[in-house]
Length: 255
Ligand code: ZN
Ligand code: FE
Image (cartoon, rainbow, N blue to C red; front, side):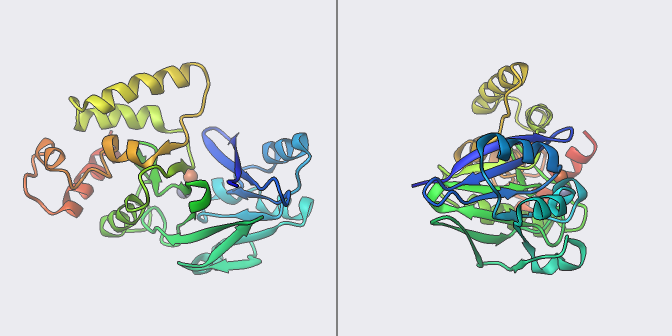
């Protein structure tokens, strides 16, 4: 039985996600940008919270964590490497560790780049990966702490998951990401089609998250840094993948 996943818009453009196991009634939240909308969603469904799973230390992902812990007695789990700058952790996680929500196991993946201690939560039974500000829908996080090499390695690790995996990233940046992607690959048919769909979804106020890894592999310019046509498009025929990735990231920073 896979987890029920509920998307909660928070702050200006953040998302938190509830993971609910119907059999055990256990519920976890991925990131805690703001306690109020998360509490409202839990309360409206009559759910309580067992775990607060934090992806990285930025305030817009952790600010509501302490309030949620005291309101529900939930445990806060986050990267051991960032324990000094996360809320007090009840479980400190490293690559390959597991968290469990009801009957389902989520694996911890180290995905540094946006920050050094950034982790992702992969739930194979629900075909879902929670990537926050590492791999984003049609984009990737800005490199605040890590190097292009680190982020490229993180993206490659995520790209190796099964293509049907749903990608839940931390922000609604998709429309701007799509406009940028089109500057790199203006003739990518899958991207052009996706841009239409994204505009429709945003016009009707729907989240564009999740996407699937297969969609990202076909349209996300950062994930496509290894594709010959993308290298050619940025004038870097035959260059190493990581250098092409660094160039695309640089262009996005100035977009
Ligand atoms: Zn961040
Ligand atoms: Fe963020």
